[in-house]
Image: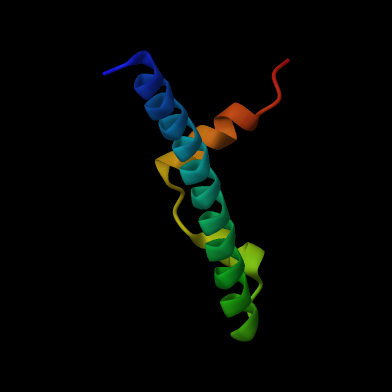
Length: 70
């Protein structure tokens, strides 16, 4: 293959990765909003409902990164 073909493949993979990440983030936000709306429709507090759920390893990881360092 020529170097131009490799360049095109690299560009497509790079922007494909960016688009996949953006889609994942939008999907996550849509899911959280849907869960909040369902909780409101049931007459519950969405924040309290989220606090009662067990935390995943991913949640703990991101909370650890978000902590302010001294």
